[in-house]
Amino acid sequence: MKIAIIGGGPAGLLTSYYLAINGCETAVFEEHPRIGYPKHCTGLVTARSIAKVPVDTKECIEKKFGKLIIHGQGREAFEISIPTVAKIDRVCFEEKIYAEAVNQKTRFRLGARIDTKRKGDEIKLLNVIEDVDFIIDARGFEAAIKNSEKVSKNKLVGINLIIKGKTSMDDNAIHVFFDNKITPGFFAWLAPINEHEVLVGGGFKNPPTQEEIMRYFHRKGFLINHGQIADKYGGVILRGPPISDFHGKNWLAIGDAISMVKPITGGGLYPIISSIPFKYNNGSCDEALIRLKTGIRNTLEKLRKQYLLSKFIHKRIFPYALDAFIPLIKMVLEVVYLDYDEHDKLVSQLIENIAKRNVYPA
Ligand SMILES: Cc1cc2nc3c(=O)[nH]c(=O)nc-3n(C[C@H](O)[C@H](O)[C@H](O)COP(=O)(O)OP(=O)(O)OC[C@H]3O[C@@H](n4cnc5c(N)ncnc54)[C@H](O)[C@@H]3O)c2cc1C
Image: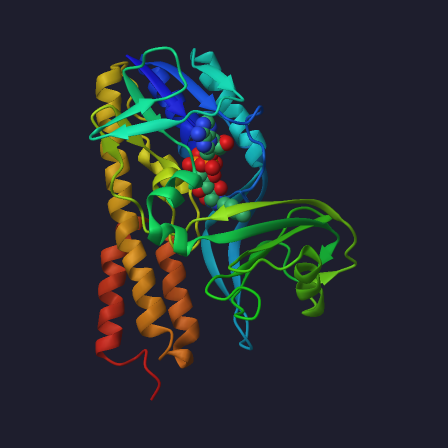
């Protein structure tokens, strides 16, 4: 079966590799001339997710973190343990998967932007001459924003700065800052990468300048001896809701293209990796597609629950529960870092707490 994959980001690359090892004839069309560029992602993902990828990407791990320190507005910082989170070099990660996909005989056309037309249940490629039997839409955030007003409304601008210098804080932790003055409705982050460089960033409704971001971290005393900005990159952070219209007669969509992201953090790598059933490698292309569709459906279902939960916490609880700020943030973070299977347990725990009025101020 001939399959065209539109988009050469992590979703398109990993899907092409998975389908190619199962005997599909795959071709990836990527509008940019080089895989991995332009850079946008912070690259934080659990080490266990990385381990699920059947391509060796160990050398792309720049640092591992075992704890998260939360800094709330005017409140004392607190620490939570997390499963090991790796900071990966996203370009390296994508290049490794690209190389393996090529080894598996996937054809790549770089610098090729593909337009499509939807007619009923089918999608047609507009500027591709060859005939294809099936299409994978892995076009990233643009497609999701175009197709869903809600996703478009929720989006943020994410900015990452790599700063030459040191931090005054724990080097082995990822630091997260909830501060409505700089990141209303979202958060900023700081992660020391090595002895000489600190990564800072945030998700913004109205993006500040890079000087304003630097000033924020410096004024708070979080950055010391800092100098130049060694690198800066960013892009659109989606926060859901996931788009349920993800397949048709001759197509299937995956990744940011259907807003397949964790709604609280905007993280998209885990949902992509956990949707692809890499364990299946028996070589039947038809069966591989069926299993992929099931994997995506299951992930979307879990993300939908997470989205509803995050909305609920945001709208119904935060405004009344300032005193319970820390336990609530802890609970939210548990949802983010625990396996998604724990959702139902967490929701009932939350409802139980509300029933006991534990989360309301006295
Ligand atoms: C600032 C920032 C920080 C982030 N940090 C994290 C993080 O720490 N951890 C995490 O898990 N996630 C993070 N994310 C989210 C993560 O980067 C995305 O979820 C992930 O990149 C989605 O992969 P994708 O392949 O679906 O889309 P993309 O990575 O966007 O790839 C889509 C590809 O399709 C190509 N394309 C688009 N349209 C066409 C077309 N018409 N024809 C041909 N090619 C096309 C694009 O050029 C692009 O290469 C972050 C995002 C941002 C913006």
